[in-house]
Length: 266
Image (cartoon, rainbow, N blue to C red; front, side):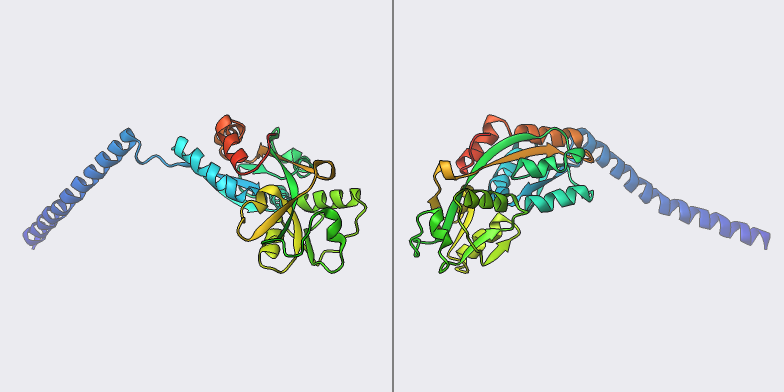
């Protein structure tokens, strides 16, 4: 009986050893692959940045981000676009992000305890967006006071809404909008869809829909200048990479991309 038990134990040991050999071989191959990947750098994870950006930067930042990623292979830039007031709220609530770019300095000043030193990267101006071909023949800010027109504006809490109020008040114009939108892209959309005859938007936003809207220029003396400050967030988990991206926005290459989109020099 003792010999039988001993024989069974020996057989089991042989089977176990046979099973472990191929597993060990596989493990050795994986280790070699991992070592090779580390040496070649193929397994290195990219640094992912999250940048909170004003809605009016949607198109130009998508282009800028693609250029940046091409030049900085180890970094991926993800953008979250919204009205500047929404971005500020996200920052105050501790949203996981690395940098923020607003459409005015006032909003950025409101979150100064949460960000690094801001740098203005671009400027913008307002235009009157109308339906394609300007069917209502709108030619100036004064025309927006016509009660027969359906005018849409951004809410006064939004930078473009404040700028709009500023220029209209300066001309002593009483404009009653049919709606007040949460960001400039929402204003533009209302005009594009024909739900409004006109709206005040940034020049760069109107330029994104040349086949759907017309842009009526506002004289500089009656206009407002929008400044776009960019800053890193103090809570960023990728401080160096975030600072590098914000700094890049002021380089000649990034500035050229902004100019081509209609933004003005800082």
